[in-house]
Structures are given as structure tokens and as C-alpha cells.
Image 1 (cartoon, rainbow, N blue to C red):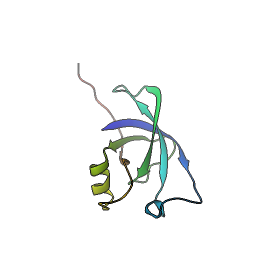
Image 2 (cartoon, rainbow, N blue to C red):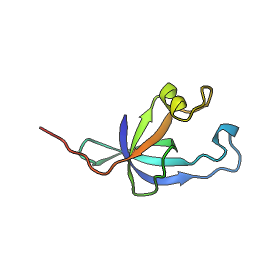
Image 3 (tube, helix red, strand yellow):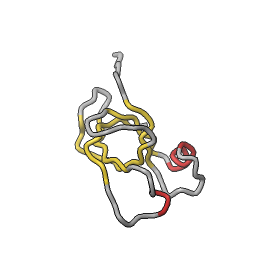
Image 4 (cartoon, one colour):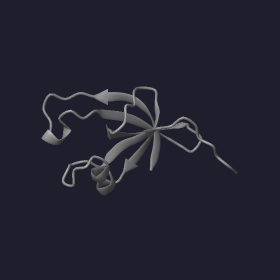
Length: 90
């Protein structure tokens, strides 16, 4: 799983039918302390996350397809949760 912060969304007029009615989010990846690392990922939203939200992403095709209930969907990454807090123990 990956953590990140939603920085934007993607709008397209022409896409694969799988993406009809689905939101695509741009998420900047974060480390375990919530610091952005400059890398990003594009993911389908399975929750109502928006710009500025800290989120949890599944970045594995089979898991993503199971979450979206489509065994043949062309998808790899899915936003599966909005993060309220992170506690790191040393």
C-alpha cells in the first residue's frame, strides 16, 4: 500500500469504457511521516477523496480489480481510504 496526498484529478472526453463514471486522481506519494517525496501516481477513486486529502492506495492490479468488482478492468491503482492520522513508533 502507498500513502499520498491528492493534488488533482484527471478529466478525459475519450477513454476506455471501464473509466466511464469513475474519478481519476493524481496523488503525490508521501513517506511514513507524511512528507511528500515528489513522486506521484494516478489512481481510480473508490472513496470520495478530494484535493488535499491524505489517502491510502492499493497499487496492485488484481487487488484493484477486486475492489472495483471488475475482473478484467484495465486498472492498477485505487484510492481505498482517506487517512485521518498516522502514528509511527520508533
